[in-house]
Length: 268
Image (cartoon, rainbow, N blue to C red; front, side, top):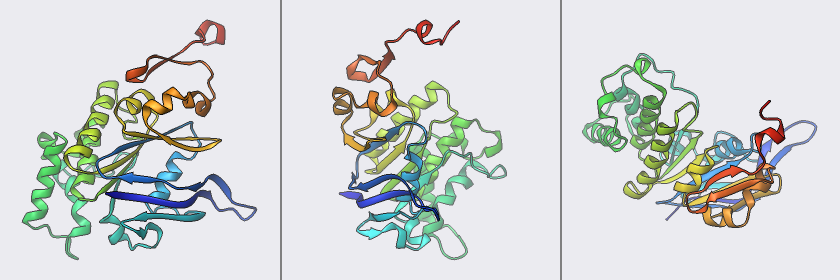
């Protein structure tokens, strides 16, 4: 089932002296049960694409459709029932405990007073269990590590109970074991919770290993393909402007730079 579709979508920023276009005429689809990674160099427009898909930023042209409806025209409450988003910034909720933070995800489904019913509490409990954060429920958010907070933010997005999840750099500021754990978790959630998950990331190896599909952004546009296709066709080298990317472990997406650091001035 298609959770997200774009039609001739053009993204960028409006300026009086002329729009700044980052990508144009994008026709994309994201299916439920799939983990898709957005890769590309800094400043190429990955986060702009994510914000546009989330309805946080208006497109320059075209549409982003959620269940066949234009995301830019949905009311905030209706939009929040169709997609959830996890941003890079740490949550400003230091006085809340883990359970209360995750329970914020039920806001689009609650009454005007924000009261939670039995079904809401069951959804929050399931979300905490799904990410393995039951032990964080009673702890203050201010007392948690970055990795623990990120677990709770993903749990909050799950508690929102939307078919589509968008994540912007969810592994930023995490150590390698936590980064690996986060990508594994997202992949598992697509299977077990039937979610469509789109993650913007700089983690090349992890994205190539765990994502079902890659959206690779470069100055030449946006290219879509499986990790195997992206690797086989040498698209990463072109996208990142590095000619010497060598994939020593093709199956796992592990790469290295052929040019020695001593020759490039990396060491002295």
